[in-house]
Length: 238
Ligand SMILES: [Zn+2]
Image (cartoon, rainbow, N blue to C red; front, side, top):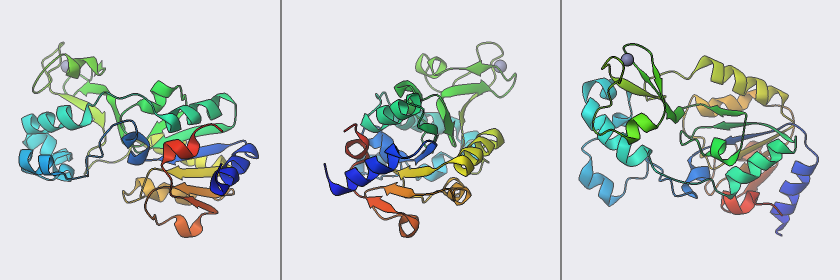
């Protein structure tokens, strides 16, 4: 075990109200691509940058193109990785109070985590813009093109926070309460580039801060421990 891993495990052992704040890096190890990575394939297939396609205005002005991208890039089958599983285990042991994630893939829930604040929503939930009916992932899996409400024919929208939309106030309030009560904050798999989500960290002032990310983040200078090894390997049980 590396010295960094020993220090991380010592911090986990002494803590009772751990909060994990994570991003895309937690899920890329499960095979979910980071949509921001612009590979050659991407550039050949899409005429807009992902941030534009995944925006509120684009959803309504280019709905078919939105769902072509969404179905191909966002609805990727994957299984939880070592990091998801360890976090669920820590919650079951009574040591971790919440996972706050910028991911929309639902993998923390699949791993068994119960208190998960999904800042950007989830691909698992959809709703009809006309009648409000709620639908699961199946509606998108079992249809093609633009999804329509089986009850009223209205346009169905994923419960995913698009660029240009605000975060859910209840999710925000829960995240803030968890951060305020935390005695250890582990930030992992995120470069903390996306606001307002990244700005939430200012609500934590309880104790040690650990950052696990391959590249530098704005939180590194405040951290007690910075780890650059892959997050699954870093969080895997000893
Ligand atoms: Zn409807």
